[in-house]
Each structure stands twice: as structure tokens, then as C-alpha cells.
Image (cartoon, rainbow, N blue to C red; front, side, top):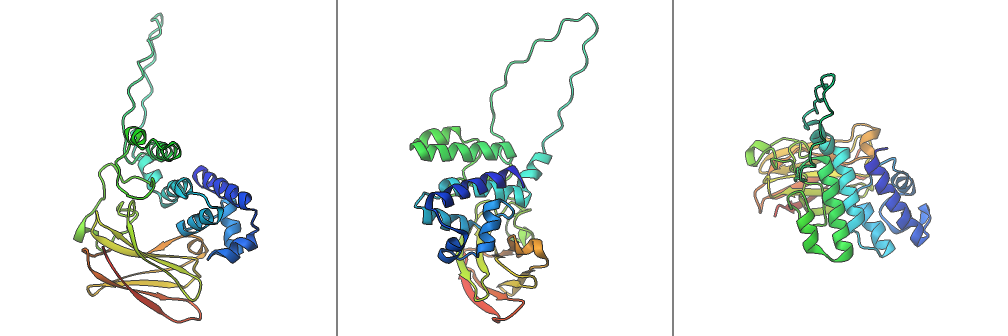
Length: 279
């Protein structure tokens, strides 16, 4: 379990303890099963954003802090945090001093600079914003925030230092996580399927693209997005996928584009389709 996921799980356990609900109670009052809540609260699985929001609602608590922790954990799970960390240049060891030379003076502490996309910057940005909300000092939070603001929601994982890696047609068929288009998307539509899976349509204004994702799925479930004759799909292939979000590749969708989203479960209920409009 990563430290990011452990922090999120601890915060969720505090909320559950505060309201005194059992796992069965949580399953009865939310869209997620008892076994799912056991995994979420033990940190074995990254919970969907919806699950975090629902637990905050039940506890009567603002969801800003927990959603901020969720954004950090999702960034680490998706690889955005580790990719930024790997991009950091190696630190060179200082040359050894000649015998008899006095030890060099310690260099002055350099001023802290913003490093958008760096994992440490993500943590400082989110924690600063959360603290600012707690004390109402929004202005101070903006001054301390080291990354660029890019999402109207509570603090989320920042984009890479260069912003999205593609725009428009260059994003077609690409992975939204790898291209940094998933850092601050809108969610035009959410659906709960007859088989129990959850679906979301995601739209990135910065990249001009849409995609869909599913969770709470079974092996063999399929998701398909059609826009302007282009079809992008994804399938749940193994047990790891069933405990995670599974995304379709992106397709170009200028504002106002109509998308057709279809979910084909591996068993039972039949194909379910709905329409969504990028905005």
C-alpha cells in the first residue's frame, strides 16, 4: 500500500468511526458493496471518487479534504506522480576535499520555487489548499500554492510542467492519463448500470477530447464511446481491473459534440446505452 493510499484510507476510517456505521450499513446506504468498502477502508483498493463523496455526505462533513487526498492517491496510482519523480535530474555528489583544506561552508538555503508536476509540489499544493479552506484564508492559500490552478473543484493533482501533452487531433486514440488530459476534466454524465457497474463520461476542455471510464465491474465487461463515427472502447481484462478504473482511449470532441456511450456486461443484463454532450 502506498503512503498516499494509506492516508486516504485512514481519513475514510475516521469518517466511518464518527458515524458508527458497519460495513453492511455502508453498503445499504451507498452504491458500493460491503466487500468493496472493506477494501477501500483497508487501503487495499483505491476507491472511486463517488464512494469518497458519498461517505463524506453520510458523515455530514465537507468533502474537500478527503477528495484532495483521493486526487493525490489517484495521481500516484495512475503513474503521474512517479513519472514526474523520475523526470527529476540526478543529484551529483560533491567532489571530495583535498587533504588539509578546511571544510567548505554550507551553501545558503535557496528560495523555494514552484515545480509544477513534481510529486512534492502536488502534496504541498493540496495540503496548503486544504488548510486554507479550514481557516477561510483563501488569499493566503493562493499565495502559497506552488502549482498552477487549473480546476474549479477543490484541489486536485496538477498537470505536468508543460500542461497537456496533446491537443485536438493529436490526442485521438491516446491514453488520457499518459497525455495529462485527465488532470482536470469535467464529468458531463454519470450512470449506474443494471449490473452494478458505474460509468462516467469525462471531457477535457484543455485537450478538446472525451473518454469514458467504468468501475465496480466484472471481468469481460466492455465500454464503448462513439463520436462522429469514431469508436473507442475498453474491456475489463483481469482482477486488477475489477478493483480499478478502466478507461477508454480519448476521442476528439469539440464543445457540443454528441457522444453515444454503451456498456456491454459480461453476463446478464444486456447492453445499456446513453447519450452525452461534451461541454
